[in-house]
Image (cartoon, rainbow, N blue to C red; front, side, top):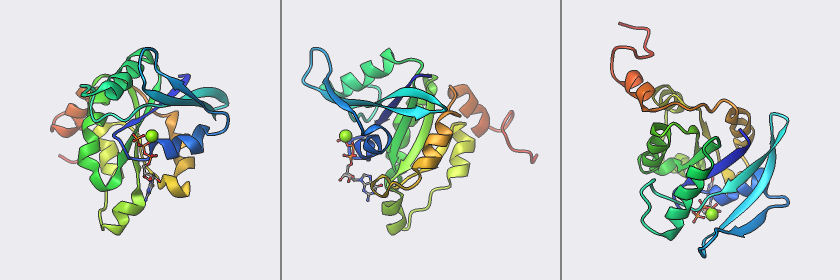
Length: 182
Ligand SMILES: Nc1nc2c(ncn2[C@@H]2O[C@H](COP(=O)(O)OP(=O)(O)OP(=O)(O)O)[C@@H](O)[C@H]2O)c(=O)[nH]1
Ligand SMILES: [Mg+2]
């Protein structure tokens, strides 16, 4: 893995995260043939310098506008990348749509439940361990504006492995699940 893509819906905190992870020396590029901008920088991951890309916001992998089209194209081009799927912790169901699509397509995904402060204020609790069990990918919690949870995010990025929908189906549906009780 030599690239990290930050993906997620608009306004979930991707750019704030990007600035923490790869802000220094970042450059703004224009996606060829479009007016859509994206930031690119780098960070150290497991002793290796890797590119980090702040991908335009997208609700799903079925693009509805030019920016979403660019997001999907970037993902298709970077097949081996680790995708950090950033989700607003106070609206988890909304964000899981994209997360499931990414996992289903076999991308190497780590889920970042950002804006944990907003969820906490709204008394919304997310069972991250259960979510990890069900989805089979690492799930971390961050408050990007305060830089909280970033160490955990970075340390678990390396664990992100292609999962695929079959593993989810197995986990959720009875036989072959991870439960040790019968
Ligand atoms: N309360 C809170 N606000 C946050 C957090 N992370 C980001 N924000 C705020 O949320 C807003 C959106 O953050 P951005 O980083 O611009 O979001 P984005 O995902 O890059 O949005 P697009 O580029 O439009 O797709 C900004 O006002 C941030 O300051 C967080 O963890 N908690
Ligand atoms: Mg942004």
